[in-house]
Length: 178
Image (cartoon, rainbow, N blue to C red; front, side, top):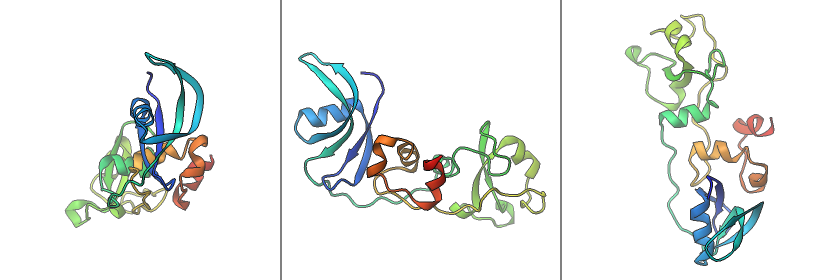
């Protein structure tokens, strides 16, 4: 089976996870999940030809505590749509503290942005105002879709076949529409 991602819904149709095709098919075959939507593609198993699912739903409600969105490099990159918040470049990305740490700038959602190496070197250990640089948007902690990591959420909002099941938060609306 080729790499294919499947949206996994809880019994109440809430997004639960994005899993690979093998996991989704195994959940369906053992009766723990049902197929809600298919891709139109097929795959061959040892016994039969099956349709490739796009969305599967658990037959029972999975109860888990709602996880917190963790501050990580990958989450900051996903929040900023993998582009430099100063020049818009998508190459050679790193993180930048808007207010430098040595001046007391915290390591928080509101003080970290995605930055290309060129802009990071230009800004150095200054604030954007001191370096005469302007942020594309002010950094802030994003809203969170329960159970989906920010990276998976950013991938999920791009999929038309999943759109009905994925809530779109206003800060990501322009990315989902474009």
